[in-house]
Structures are given as structure tokens and as C-alpha cells.
Amino acid sequence: MNIKTLKFKILSLFFISYLIIFLIVLGFLIIRIKYFNFFYFSLLRYYAPLFTILIFIVISLISVYIIFKRIFIYPLEDLLFNIKKIDVKHPDKIDLTEKYRKTGNEFYEFAEAITVLNNTIVKKQEENNLIIANLENSNKKLNILNELSYKLSMVFTLEYAIKTFAEGLYSIKKDGEGRVDSLHINIFDTVNKKTVTSLIYSRKENEQEQDAASENSGKVIVTTNNINYEDYLSNCTLLKNDCKNKNCDVTVDNCEFRGTAGSYKCFCLKISDEVVGTVSIDSEDKDFFAQEITDLIKETINIASPVFAKLILIETNKELAITDSLTGVYNRRFMYEFAKREIVRAYRNSADLSFAILDIDKFKNINDNYGHHTGDVMLTEFTNDLKNVLMRKQDIITRCGGDEFVMILPDTDKENAVNLMEKLRIYIKNKVYNFEGGINLNITVSVGVSSLRSMPDDKSIKNIGDPDDILNNLLKIADDNLYKAKNTGRDRVEG
Image 1 (cartoon, rainbow, N blue to C red):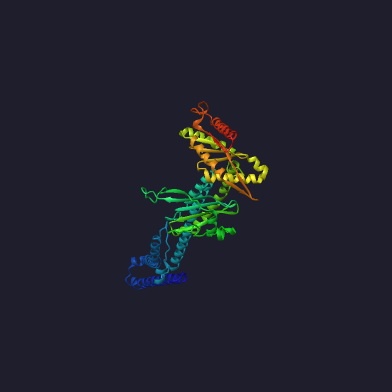
Image 2 (image 1 turned 60 degrees about the vertical axis):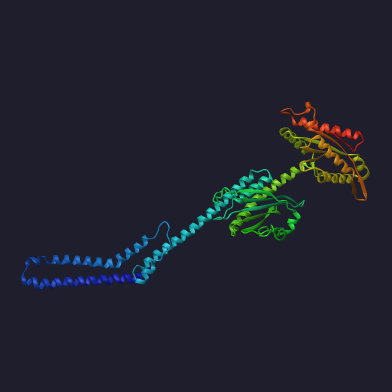
């Protein structure tokens, strides 16, 4: 029933009520004329109009009240009752029209309007809640990225930058229980075709603290993973197919050649428009890599990449500054700094420390007779023998100029140092070096050795001394022994 029908019904009821009132009043008038004149009740006749008016008013008010109560009050009270049931703070969608439609009630259109208004408010509230949720997610995302950017701006080494980057990835969480459980970071030197670093970060739960809700539950274990650059490049699906075409928006789920019970993705690591590595992430949550999580990981990688590029460049320049360009071993500058640290460490720990100065006998004749190129190749091959065949991991080889090498031998006393150099002398003497043009050369070496514990008392460090003086004395003793070996026929070790 619409508004026009409601108006018509109201007017009809008013018309009927007033018609009834009119008939009642007419009846009183007839009674007054017929009976009150007959009995000559003057007093009643005098007050009859007043009583008639009063009765007219009372009957009119009662009629109007009944009409309005029937048409307006009852339905309005029912409508208000249904409206009051609406939760103002947390409104739900309602439908007040069904009840009024069935009964043909006059307030159907009002109920419909209230229903539409309420449902519109609910819809807007749902939209606002969605906007608020998106803003909260964006705020969390910005906090993660901002914190990572700040921490990366404070680091000065590649190792610490990668650790900070890993912590940033571990802070990414999905609603519920989804989180990063392990990740594998590979960075390559694409110029020299070698692995710069390959680290596995894995979360290990604490057996005594099983509180999964705790932010600090479990600890991160870092493992060095010595992968071969060529093997990884040729087998990794991501680098082999997609990233070589600079298409680094792609991810794959089989880069590390292993499966997972949860979910896994491998991302490209790009530095200066060149793909130089991968970041592989595991999660126990099967649905962890939603689009928003994947996008956040990519943005995290994009923030870290320039920092990696800067630190790799710094470390490369630092390495160049302390490395001999021909042989690849450390140079004189590094030897002095490292040797002084080793001297202080040896005295602090009451440990042994020895030095050896080695010189190739008559090396000038090789340059003069076969050319400097052959001499350079000889030095390179000779250095490789020192690094790969005879020297131990703790030993440091440095080239101090020409064919002279200084070897720092930590935790080695004088006797063992002499024995080690003697083995080296015999190995070199029995080796034949082959060069282009059918040149075959055999060389010998002379070696001078010095040891920290074998120094004269007046030359050693007493309590707090100067490492520079000790180093200079150790090098002088080794150099004197070297010249002694040369002056007594070469191909000797003196200590």
C-alpha cells in the first residue's frame, strides 16, 4: 500500500467519523425539539446546546484517537520497536519490508526507506572497515620497509647487511600463523664467475620454550652453503630461463631443486640492472605467498639491493687495495696490518708465531733470458703452489715485491716453521714449470725464518709494547737469515 492509498484511507475514515458525529448531533437536536418542548423542561432546554457541543467534542476526540491509533500509532510503535533492535554501533543488514508487505500495512514504504538507509550505512561501514584494514596493512608494510631502510643505512659490511636483510624478511608475517621459516641468499660475482656469498637462514624452535605466539620463539641459525657458481647458474630455473632476460618480476618454486611441505618461492636479486643472485624463501604455511606478501618481499629485495651493490663495491675496492694484482695474494700493506694484529694476539694468548721470507733464486735470469711475461707466469704458477699445495689454512701468503714473499705462520714455533719451509723448498726444487714455446724451467728458493718466542729478550714485548717494533725486528731477523741462506749457496732454509 502506497502513500496515496494511506491518504485516501485517512480522509475516508475522517469523513465517516464526522458523518457519524453529524448524525448523533442531529439526533440530539430532534430529541430536543420533540421532547424538551413537550415537557417544557426549560432548564434542560437551556443547556441542551452546551451538552450537545460537549458530546460532539468528546465523540470527535474519541473517533480521531481511534482512527489515528489504528492507522498510525500501532504500526508506528511496531516500526519503532523493530528500529530499536538495530545495533547502532555494529549495524547488520535488515529487511523490515517483508512484514509490512505481507500485511499490506500503510508503513511499508517507510519500512523500505529505513531498510535501504540501514543497509546503505552497513555497506559503507563495511567499505570503511576494508579501507581501515588496508591502511593498517599498508602501515605495517611501510613500518617493515622503513625499519629495514634505516637499519641498512647503518651497516658497513656485506655480512651484516645480509643479516639485517634476513631479519627484515623474517619480520614479514601473514594473518594467522603464516611466516618465513627459512631462506637462502645467494650473491654472485658475475664478472669473475664465482660465488660471493651463499647463506642459509633457518628458524630452529627452542625445545624448552614452545610458545609459538611469542615474537622471540625460536632462533635463527645461519649456515654457510658453498655452492658452485656455474652449477647453480646452469640448473636454477629462475636464472636459466627468466632472469637472464632481465625479467625479474617472475618467481619460481623449484630454484633450489627441493620440495617443501608448505610453500616455497625463489626471487631474483638484481644489482645495477644485472641479476647477481637469488633469494629463496620457505614457509610452513601452504598459502603464505599471497600477492601482497610476494609484493612486499620484492620491495624488501629492491631496498636491500642498492646497499648490497655499494658494500660489494667497497669490499672489492678494499680487496684490491690489499691484494697483489699479479698473483692474487695479499700485498705488503695487508701484511703489516695483519702481522701486527697476530703479534698482539700471540702475546695475549701466549701462542707461537713465526715469519718466513722466501726469495726465488736468480729470478732475474728468467726475466732476462725468457722475458718478463714468462717471469710473470712463473710467479703466478709459483704462488698457486704456495696457496694450494703446501700452505695451511691459517697461513697467510703476501707478496712484498718482485719475487720476494713473506709468509705469516700463526701458532707455529721456529722448529715447525723451519720444517714447513724445508718441505716447501724440496717440493719447488723437484718441480718443473712448463711454458709456451717448449720452455721447461726448474727453480730453487732460499728462505729465512724468524719466531716470536726465539727473539732476544731486549727485542720482545714486555707487558705493553709496540707491535711495530716487534714486527720490524721479526722481519729483520728473517731477512738476515734469508741473506745468510743466499750467501751460503742458495736453495737453503735458515732460521
